[in-house]
Length: 400
Image 1 (cartoon, helix red, strand yellow):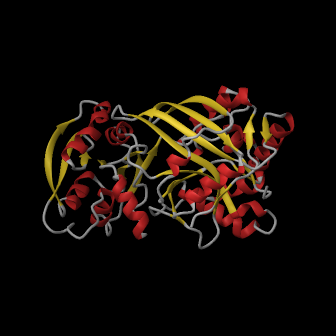
Image 2: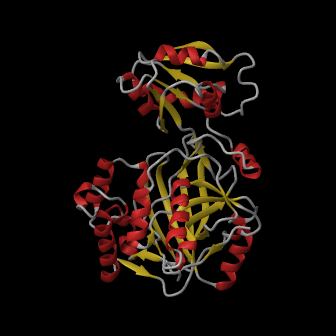
């Protein structure tokens, strides 16, 4: 069963917490990173993302920078091992108030561990995260895991001995209030560990980070004993807490007419009108949910509903991403993955790609089934929000 260990956390000096946290590196472009860096000289983006201005040896530059923060007291290390309760309160896209409660600890990464993936990863250069982890000898960004066993939320209801609160804008969930509570009582730590150890942990977000952590453990485990685990946030897999959105498909390398012909082999194409501007795509996710059908956006802003037709897709898993993969499996094309429907529509209508398909989000029940069966979803099937901020809790890899 899954193992989550306490560790001696590195934390921002309390009055700096709100200034130091930022969104995770993989949801920002370079301009956004620069804006976060400009917001405060100790914002975590100064050490979590390498930019061209960091010089010819950027990872060692970032490593020296974070070391200076420790020396100056900007980051302080706990005297004793602890877990950290993290609560995220927000209003989701449907207007529902939610609070996700989870715990930050060190999650096992060794071969044969009880940590499961739920979707395939896309080919992606992982050298950046690998080089940064080795240079800093730290985990800077947490993986998000979902406990398949029940009871974690209940055991986390009691607060820790101290709480730090910060608010941050999140691109997917608007304003999010984050609350961190330290748990250093051995009895409470054991109770939390026992609940998580009842079953496996399913990775929700951070598949690449988890894969990099395994590589680092294989290559540097004898020198850095802490690499056998990685920084992780673990929460319950429950419908009332989680907000899961779709990640839409934007196509290039195939013209719009050819793509339509490919889609016609599995769908009946139904006219849905025309977008006046890309901003009109903001209302499409609710219409997609109501109709239960994905929507194709053409280069002229035309909308086409995709209604299942015939037996071509009868044996394909009931996921829009899987169905699209099946229909395009033997066709040369390029695909990008975008969460924002407006950005997807802009890409098409501005001529940067040929077409986009906005898809349905994956339900919690299907995510649970995936965890149990080990049947992986296509890449970029789920977008969990809000995103876990980076910078509130860091973990050194010295094994303490």
